[in-house]
Length: 198
Image (cartoon, rainbow, N blue to C red; front, top):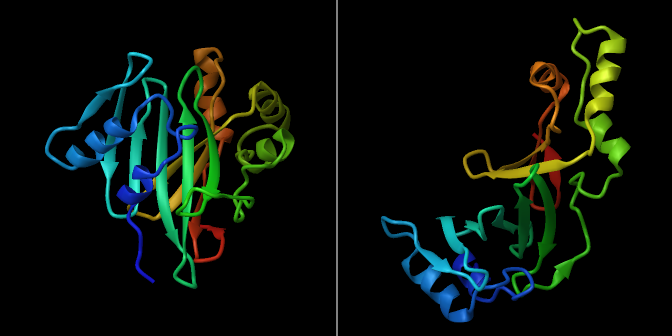
């Protein structure tokens, strides 16, 4: 089977997934992206939409000042392709949603092993750890400061992994480093069927 490219996928992206730019603007973005300068189009909210990075199977789209979307084509063991869409709101704290689609933009009801549908308690437990040198009561106090519980996700083209990290809430500057000390990042790599921890 021939492999579809990310440009073809973006060309057919539904309006509800990439809103407020027209089909002509999509074509303009795809036509000129990849040249030396980044191409921006004015969207219907008078902001700018641009494609920051693009390759055969990956693209990063800046939808507006506060929202970015990453698209990654994943190849299955049977040569089919699955589209992973990571949408991140960057204000006030980073929070990502991860969804999967066919190359025709049909939703796939699966997380493929990613922790995106876990409850807050499970996520908080999964993405924190107590340093050996930290007293238990100190850890618990810091643990309870992480509210709201928000996950940010980032695709790394070099490692071919998706990495999740807790967003740090607005806290006193003195506690920032201590909070960072108990938070851990977790990366997952696609194996053709599911994501497994790296």
